Image 1: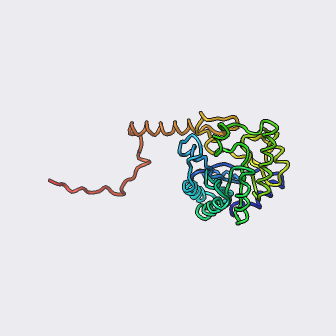
Image 2: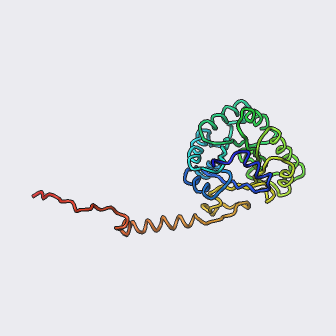
Amino acid sequence: MGRKSVLDLRKLKAGNDKIVMVTAYDYTMARLVDMAGVDMVLVGDSLGMVVQGRSDTLPVTLDECIYHTKCVSRGLEKAHLVFDMPFMTYQISPEQALQNAGRAMQESGAQSVKLEGGERTASAISLIVDAGIPVVGHVGLTPQSVHAMGGFKVQGRSDEAAERVVRDALAVQEAGAFCIVLEGLPTDVAQEITDRLDIPTIGIGAGVHCDGQVLVSTDLLGMNTSFKPKFVKHYASLEQTIVDAVKAYGDEVRSSAFPDAAHSFNRKTPRKVAKLY
């Protein structure tokens, strides 16, 4: 059995089975989350913040996303792999979007691409889908528009704003996307979108009524406990575990307790050393 396909994911929604999605940026994490049985893995442009230590996702390049997706692809056997199209790789024109999406699919090992934006991105989504490339949409809080939104803020709070997000979601579906991420939305708005769409919705900070959920892997594992927005739940506290483990290693190195005999190699017979005098 290979990786989950677009049809497999649609069947999960049809059967009212929740879809589990996480991010990964390297082979090791990809192998582990795949072993855990997640349905989808996103190589997000969030790598700019998680891996590169930047304050937002805007500087991430297409080449960087391709590199990290290649690494993740090697670690997956079952999960569907999504390539996140970075800032300014699809906004200029639908033709630019198609060219870059095609390159992403050819070089990275991904099975689909993700584009932020609703009505404004619909024409690009349509052209990419027409070329035979599956697309995941993304509406609500779209991190690549962080400056236009005035920060990472919940969207759709007013009736007018909620209606705009609903229109965006419908436009993404109409353009041919097979799935859509709903980020930073009030629960009732996300529920309305989920009820109105035929394609699966994947929530992040959008409440329980979505067809699935996505979290950044390092967030759910508690690898940076100082970062905890309201929608993040730490299912482990690996930050302190890792710090303690490395500290213990350092202590043993400094005291010469490591490496001990169990972690060293010896010859079967002692080497005869010639006398030099």
